Image 1 (cartoon, rainbow, N blue to C red):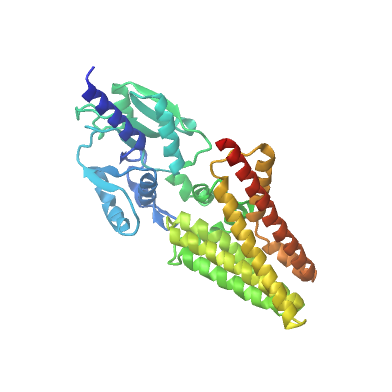
Image 2: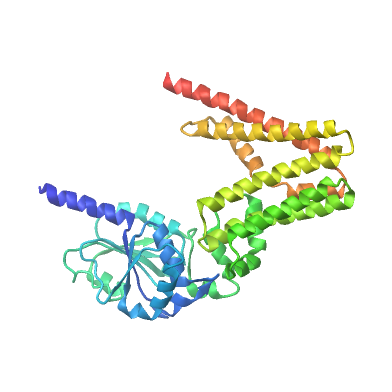
Length: 410
């Protein structure tokens, strides 16, 4: 046994599992014409390159025949983060394993993550990934010291005919579509499958679906997701000021503005993911302005109900509401930190899921209903009771987590 060769095999397998190298090939039917197709303001080749980068690919090979779309790649490399691009006359897999991507398809990063897991079952040999209707999607070519082993200027089918290959079918629930399908008006909404999150609340998914034409329009303008976040915040503040007037008509108008703010709050994240504009700053801005909107809304609600009473009474209720929200927020954060590393029983898990569902709900529509029936006073007291119950249940969960931790240590 040669220890040096064994180490080389292990390192090579690790590179394969992380897919550091990839190559994009032409579409079998349309060559490279798909690459410059506009998909929600971003060329298709740019979307593929960014998806590969976010899947862990560091270097991408493009064949010399793709030089016709080089100007697209060069322009967008200045705007978005992509892998290193290498233009090769005669690409091969000499010295490294390589992920081969068929041109003309768009896929989500989860497809690459799935392939990393599936590839563990085939530690040696090439892999061919097919999708619906046995359509070729991806391939994995093992590295070789001989450049002639895999001359990648040949179609993958010819390479597979020369070497043993393992066939794998991609799960149907993973997103992958041809560029031609995504360009059609009927299937344009399929892009939403790429920008959704598994843990999104139901109302966010509903908003994303209903407002897709507007989101797609905004994606082709200079309006940024952060600007949309700020506009939604200002709309919510304006709604809160109208509610604070304490009159029926102003209350309904304010509730309608809050609903508009709620819709924009569900759109900004979708727009960010659709245009690859996500950032920690944008996420923090969205969360911060969302909390500020809620606080200002509750203050306006108190003023609408008790503003005609003494200033002392209104001030007391404003202090009570804001203090309760602050306590609930701190206790919720503390419980979230303690939850990590614990394995709660079924009852506690059900309580956690219920609280997460409540915390993820936006009550703008409920505010509008109470405004229409002139029931802000009742709504305020229901919210006050709910906030107290919310942080008390989280406090109970904290005690349970600490009890489990002490038991596990002992």
